[in-house]
Image 1 (tube, one colour):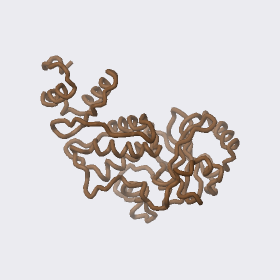
Image 2 (cartoon, helix red, strand yellow):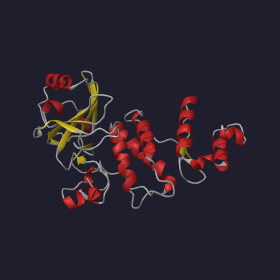
Image 3 (cartoon, helix red, strand yellow):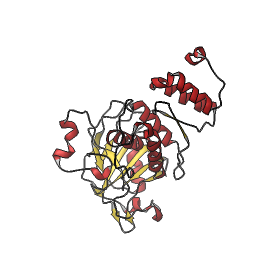
Image 4 (cartoon, helix red, strand yellow):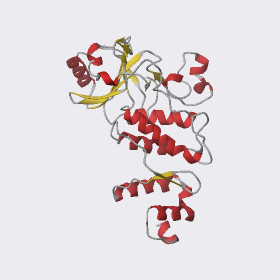
Length: 295
């Protein structure tokens, strides 16, 4: 892939390989729609390869090209099938839970991380069934409700109508809106994080305070916890410097404390007196002095 979004992928080596040619340690992004692929992403519930094989056979899904992800907390695999267009329309992104296994069916608007890429854990994605992708089975298509199928227009991999890069003061507001839309389509944590990394590189102005990996991970975790189909963006509080945004959605004290810990760990500008004044005013907190703020 090159650029942002699965519809920006390219088969031209000079374009597809330019990140590596420039010396970056990039991963491999595979566009499902531009590669005519449907990928069954098995995220949770599998214990090992034998468990996966038994699950696949019970559902009647044929063997096909399969990759184990680099995640080590659970046994996770991607099964590739050939054929994204059906009589109902283009196969969409669709979350599933079947027989104790949950994940996503990835089609229109989706990408997957390819074999040979490095997971954030440090482990590589690797092939466990080195086969040619076989046609998408009808049993897989039948799992998706008819109203979820998309038309064939490539309108799902876009990130919005951004004619220029998002300025620093609006980055988090716009990124949260994008995360909400991706989550509404069923995207889980790893998909959200991949989209956010692409967005940071291609549509966000780095400004004086570039977005750090930890911030993207926290945003992806937040998005993965939203209810699918009902994700929305809440009102925001911007720092005086126009950087980090604190979203005013406190439902419990723990959520506020966690947010503040992350904020103070990653954003030095929040240690200023001006930032504290804004925070105290917006959250109706008691006034503090320098000693309280330091503690």
